[in-house]
Image (cartoon, rainbow, N blue to C red; front, side, top):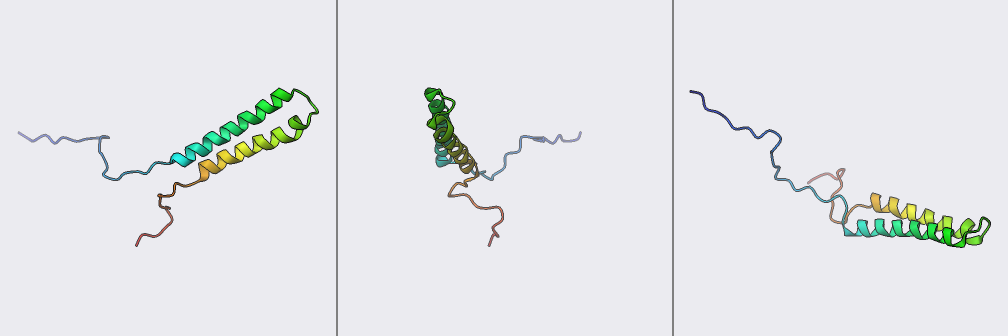
Length: 89
């Protein structure tokens, strides 16, 4: 009688630990960006004028700063991570 071989298809556990994509600082920066966008729209809503200074000039700057902050938080690498392009010695 032939021996049966147990195969773990799809259940293989690799010994490599994958680092987290974002660290605590990235999440704080993302939260700050969302808060800036919220504050910008809130200021625009509170003034409630079409040709007001806050609605035309200040709020769009705050909203754009929020979007730039979110892009920076996504693109920022955690400090302990290695680049994939670095040669290993």
